[in-house]
Length: 232
Image 1 (cartoon, one colour):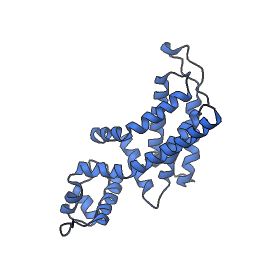
Image 2 (cartoon, one colour):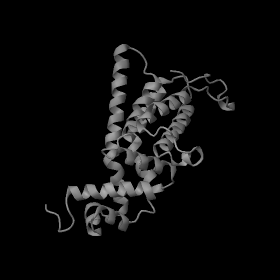
Image 3 (tube, rainbow, N blue to C red):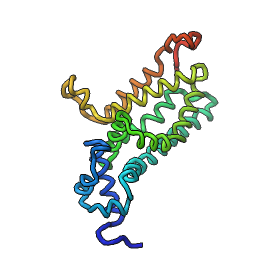
């Protein structure tokens, strides 16, 4: 079926998504207007309405077009380490679960050619800024993947209370989101960094996340008898 004049095809749709993604990073979801998106993409409002129908649908598609790929890469990485552990007759290590989950997102955050870095900055900003509509959407998109990874973490740490694993995963998600959202906030009081290579974020952040996983468990009143460490 042909598109009405002026509304364009897949190339126009891609331009709209790219423009919206970059503007959402710079201005936030709420402050970015449809007029700003059409001006940046070089299209009219009819084209946006034709391809997406509404701003909410546009926001969903901006996230959906890259989240699917990201989650596939995560699950493929987890499949590989689980298969290797099964073949060796050993239990998967919690560090392997974390690497399978977080490394694909950090790798995407270093991609400055195909838009991965911009998207991950947007995803990080979304986690740190409240937006009920987007968070509900992301929760649905992540549900199956998160369930699979949390089950793998629980299995890899049988002696650690599940609520403690959830808290640590929550902290790790927060640290990752803040890191990939950009370094502007830290530069406010730390000055300009001497190393801005995004590829170096992966070993730095993974080292931090694994350190947090291995830290001694807190001596909470309800969990005083818990194991002292969440070791590999």
